[in-house]
Length: 532
Ligand code: 5AD
Ligand code: SF4
Image 1 (cartoon, rainbow, N blue to C red):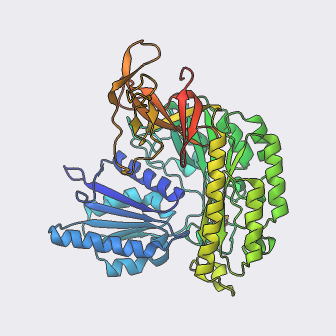
Image 2: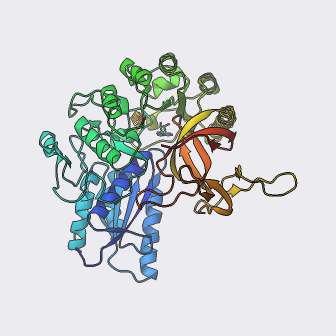
Image 3: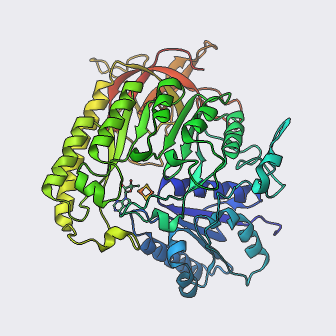
């Protein structure tokens, strides 16, 4: 590689799986000596896409145009562009013809070999590569030796241990590990819901071996993670494909839950048809399994669910929810809804509203149906007029916003534990008493989010508090974290002296908090006990 490390810049369009893929890619490139930088400084541009709902193709074209214009105006030569994810998988080769700067295409499975390919591109300026094949099994992504100190597991993992060099699984030495991390447990999906493109662009379901999942979790926990979210398109059918090692999903949950250092466990996304009694039992027994579940309903009409090939009906969905709530009475549910699926009548839509009201989801993500290339619903008759679908969507969202606000309001006065993740973007405002004087501790938050998302919160030196343990008065700053039920809480805390570079301030602390007020999508709390 060159003496000066090449600078790369990644843009991600899409879902959580895609964001996790990009994060992995960045880590892997950094471990190989590349440096992450801005759009302007990059010599390697990576565009990672997801086409589950949007049409990211257009975004990719406009981004490729922007890169080409930037290079022309600034006389930048030798720029390498890599396009990955769903768009590469769908329209790949035509991109390289239209945009000569595109030198690497990688699909959702091919990403595992992208770092190596990018190294080769740097060495051979005339090379172009395409990694668009689907792999047979789950391809491990570590470019690392799979050994935890004092324990060699590489032997049991076969082809799993690939490049015997560099840092530990997915995380370079000294790299910052956030308190809450995602761990991939599978790729692809076999469900073929008729609206969905995933089985075509992410391939068939491939479960990762349990030992590999546990290994990555162990290392992340050793490096300071306290909350793990297991990630997959259809997590509860984990283990039911031919490459799997026989561990069922509930078994995997129990194994991860038993790892030392784990405080909280979550997973996304389950399918209602595959919620097994063992998984319901796990919610009853595993304390670290958070009482929050995102369970996509998609529609409240049995007719539409059939047309979507969801393979459950509303009775089954209701039954699953009742069993889950019995096992875990504090369980909070969120969901995905598609409105305007072909053939959806006003009555079908009313059925959706009704079940949403009955189940009282804490949050819902709702989308207007759109045709995806190759997905079967694109061929269905009775497409819904966009204006009708939009009107239904806004009715649904209006109801949900109100319901979500009420749920947040009802949290006031409750005590919970918050896992602090980052400094809050909330502005700290000082509470004024009725004389207009600034009141002493405690300070108060503005109920508005700061409009400028990049604005850094600055502590007010004129507000002080006592940091537990050291007795000294320190200024306050705003921190943000989540409750086990996934509610975002902002809390005001005395500035903590920085001890080491890998953990900043209150990051990673579990803090007992009393909820004092609700804001738009979050809560405001006050510390009521010592953190741990
Ligand atoms: N149209 C609209 N929404 C879709 N989703 C998936 N495919 C489509 C589509 N073709 C939504 C589903 C899914 C979420 C990830 O995206 O609600 O749960
Ligand atoms: Fe798509 Fe259905 Fe698979 Fe989810 S379960 S990824 S909606 S095919």
